[in-house]
Length: 358
Image (cartoon, rainbow, N blue to C red; front, side):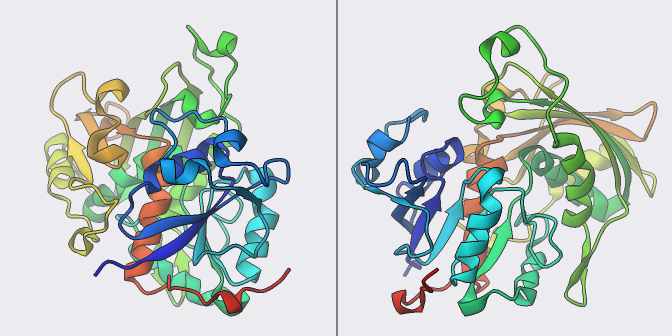
């Protein structure tokens, strides 16, 4: 019998919140029972409160559900947070203090020492950090990385295990959807490349060190990996493409890199998590693959594509990585995090009587 959980979505009317709604429609384990947003949206049917931007219609079971204010008295076992960072810090804290597990897409708690920064195929053991969190009544926070970090680290994990990754140079070509909605102004986006995304390069420099770090004595010892990043916004709707050059600690040829990526077995493969793709990494040999338009949706948007593996004249090996920024890099990644937490026993059904009043 499948597990069954009631879930709430914080920031349900925003771009990430809408992606949660879309991806959770028909989920075998999780049923949406609370759509939370600002006081301005509270009381309205979801179809009126949300300016829907999804490619599919609003799920019928959700369209007429009343939006509620994001206060920690929701009828759910845990919450997904699609909140903007400007409000996520205080609201996520309130929910954790009230005993809710918070599965967050926001950046606010990613680098906190006791908060897992999680990609299930990369560092599933880091969920043990939850046990060091001091929230009352079983509350905790788990985060997923920045969307541009996700694709890079998914490709680096097998290579770090095999050869040790010392240095990385990465240039990102990031989709417009990564800026939310309405996002980048059309006159800035069309026929143009914007060579700056605020805060993005700092995240790419710091988050991989935690993700590829080692859990020891209840703490993550960061990896020594050094990442130099340049981030750009390009006129593509979905899919972050990244041009990566790597310096290894041990000698590695492009052929060896390809073999390691192709043969990598996800550490969660045997768990059969509903959102986990059949193929975590897909390696292409075609000289012009991967491409956002053609390959972002692989594995339901959860497969990370790698191609153009070649010698690097400056470092050791270079390649191109593609990941779906709003699925693997945001809502889909958070849902997979929650599925792993169910299997590890960190998410359980809550008695409504345990909810604290704040």
